[in-house]
Every structure is written in C-alpha cells, then in structure tokens.
Amino acid sequence: MSFDLILFGGTGDLVWRKLMPALFQAFRHGSLPEGGRIVGVARDDLSDEAYRALIKSRFDQVELAKRPTEEEFARFAALLFYLRMDLSNASDYPRLASTLQEHAADTVVMYLATAPALFTVFCEQMAAAGLKRPNMRVVLEKPLGHSLASNRAINASVRQVFDEKQIFRIDHYLGKPSVQNLFALRFGNALFEPLWRRENIANIQITIAEDIGIEKRGAFYDDTGALRDMVQNHALQLLCAVAMEPPINAHADAIRDEKLKVLRSLKPWTPETLRQHVVRGQYGAGSVDGAPVVGYRLEAGVRDASQTETFVALRCEIANWRWAGVPFYIRTGKRLAGRSAYIEVNFRPAPHAIYKSPTGAGNRLVIHLQPKDGLELHLFAQGQQNRISSPSSDTPLSPVQLDLDFDKRFGSERVGAYERLLLDVIDGRLNLFVRSDEQEEAWRWVEPIMQSWVADAEGPRPYAAGTWGPSASSAMIARDGYCWTEEC
Ligand code: BG6
Image 1 (cartoon, rainbow, N blue to C red):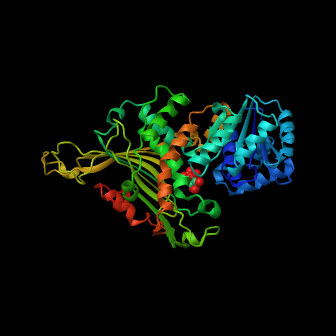
Image 2 (tube, helix red, strand yellow; image 1 turned 180 degrees about the vertical axis):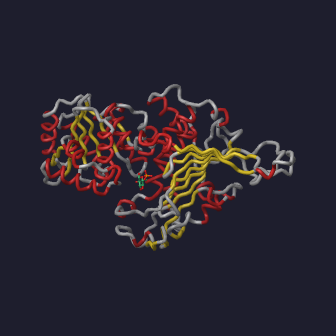
C-alpha cells in the first residue's frame, strides 16, 4: 500500500523532534509500508536536498540508539521531499495539488503539525481548491482549541471537509506502550476485572510529573497552562482507560463509546468542589537535579505577572455504579521533583484483619508509564522474622512486590508512541485516536475550572521548582485520609 504523508509545519519542532525520529524508527523496523513519500511543507524556500540536510542535522539531537547511520539516512532520505507553501494563501494550493498528482498514492495523510489557528483555514482552502479525496486522512495535533467553543468551531470546520472516519485527533499518551498494556491488563486478563470496582478499590491516583520547565515554548505555554496542556487531554484519556467499562470489541467506536461514557459520568463541579478539590500552582525558583533553575515568571515569553498554572491537582468522582464514591486524583506539573508518570490503583484493606498491617493500607497496583514501563503489584507477605511464630493478630507482615518490567521483557520490539500512531494513521486504524464528542465532553468538564480561575484573584499557589507542587495538593488528598505515593 503506497502512501503520501504530508507534514504541514515540516520544519517545526514537532516534526524534527518527534515525527521524523518516529518515522525513521518505523523505517528501520521495516514497518513503514513500501512506496511511500514523506513531504515536509513549510514557508521557507528549500529544495528537497536542503530539506533532507536540515532533517539530517536535527537527528544529531536524537538519542544515540535512535540516530540513523549515514547509510540508513541515505536510504530514509530517498522518501523525503519538500514543498514550499503558505497554508493561509489560496494561490499556494494548486502546488499542493500538483505534488499530490505526481504520485498516485493509495492513502494520503495530511498531518497538521502547525498552529491550531491554521486548521480551519486549511480546511476551507482544501474545500475551495476541490482537493478533498476519499483516500485522505487528516491528523490534528493538540491543542484542539482553547475552550469548548473554539474546539467545536475547529471540529465543525474540519467536518465540513472530512468525514469523522478520516479525522485522526492525536493524543500521544494513547500511543504509549504502557497505555496499550493497561487495556491488555484489564481486557485481556480475567484476573483484575472482577476487582476493578468500588467494592474493592479505595482510590485511584494519576500522576504525570515532569522535571523539565516550559523549554522554549514560553509564549504558547503562558496562554495555555497545565489544565489545557495536560489535564483536558492526556490525564483525562488515562482516566478513561482506567475507568471505562469493557468495550464490546476492540473496534475504534466500541472503545471510544466507552471512554465517552466515563467523561459524561464525571461529577459536575459545584462552587464548593471547585474550591476544595482543585489546586493550581506555579513554580518559583528552585533546583532540579542539583542545578538552580529560574521561576516560571522569569522564563522567556512569559508575562511578568503571569497567573498561568504550571501545576494542577484535582479530585473527581465518576457517578456510575462501578465507581460511585471512589475518589480519582489527578496531578500534573512542570519542574516537579522528577519525571514520572503512573497510575496507582489503591485497593481497600483486607476486610477482617488477622494480621497486623504494617501500613494499615491495602494492596496497590501501579501502572508505570514512564520512565519505567511496567506493572508493580504490592502485596503483603510473611518475612523471615515470622518463621517460628504462627500467625496471630500480632504477626506483622512485610510489604513485597511483583514487578513486571515490559522494557526488559519486550526490549527492542517496543514501538514508541508516535511511531505507533503514525503507522495507525497510514493503516487507517482509529482505535487510539480521539473522537470529537470525547474531546468536547472533556472541554465541557474542565471549563468550570477555567472560569473559576478567571474569577479568582488569589492566583496559583507558588511552589519551589524541584518539589512535588504546592502543599495544598497534599492537603487536598489528606482530607480524604490518603496521601500521594511519595508522602505515604
Ligand atoms: C505535550 C505537552 O502534549 O506532552 C507538553 O504539550 C508535555 O507540555 C508533553 O511536556 C509530555 O509528553 P511526554 O510523552 O514527554 O510525557
């Protein structure tokens, strides 16, 4: 099956940082279909050769194991082409048309790795130029809008040109191997599903912590903040993956229908829950990995008195039979004490204690997303010291864990998130992409938080870079009698 992959924003960060390395890995693994072209599109005046040279130079910044050798790059470069084009200029579209005509590809993927403001313009121009074809797919990068209204406007304009099944909304967290494994754990094994409910689970925590700051994206980030950048999409998609009902099959709409139900079941906010169950923070100066770092407001591109949050912690509930009353905690932030993302399922303690529990807590299942990719099941066992005594209420148990490391087990067979998602788009598999109704529902749920912040003069709570965020985040979870992992 031949393909044309047209990368709009072809000289931008996303393309050389994520997409080209992912495409190269697919090429190296032999999974990129034969007979394909990858066409970078941008406004710069470049030849195909100059574009190849630019991409080659960028590979120097990719981790060593993922860098091509000279010979590999020469073969990969034969797939690369360049088109100079301004997406907002109608007179440039005939050149896109003739580029497409040069190659009778079975599938044409239009990947919009551009500012979202161009999505609508692109769709209008595609329609005006009569370029829409049934074999086309369009990939939209986040953020898709800034609010429910702007998200709807983008979705409406894209749908005027493309059918829903041609639209691939990326949330790269869904492409992470650990998220695939969460689905496999829940729906490919009979062991956990009977336990996966309010009767057995005390609470679920989702953490996406980053130690990096906002890097070179100050202006973008200052208009966006952690809620829009991470919670509305990545964190809520993880919440759906952990809380959804088993889908009737593995088809895209069966999965997306179930995720949508979770989003629809999220308890609506009230003035009281907005006050008690949402914490926003902003990092000040501190140190990360022993090196001093500046506070958020001193980062390039950030307003002096910015009120943008770089940290969010919140508590929510899913109002359905499976989850009624079980708190779900989400937290994410920049410049935290480490880079780690995981979902922690905290089971209730044994209902009748004949042993002394070392912590008073129950079993825990931790699904590690990164940097480690694996599962840990925390149990209790009798340690050596108990060898001669028979069990009694005084017998203390020791915590032990079953540890599955997927990187070790599957090693180089593992496929990275963007590699996986790009191959899925080329093959037309929508399972790991977000449908418009899911996205709108997620916006609908976060909007009251955004509105409450506009009305709140207090602003985000400060935290020192290199810590786990403002103390209010610990206080929020402690009110329920629980703690974040690193504090327990
Ligand atoms: C992106 C956000 O969607 O996800 C970034 O815009 C964030 O701010 C990134 O750093 C995190 O992705 P990952 O895969 O590194 O956890």
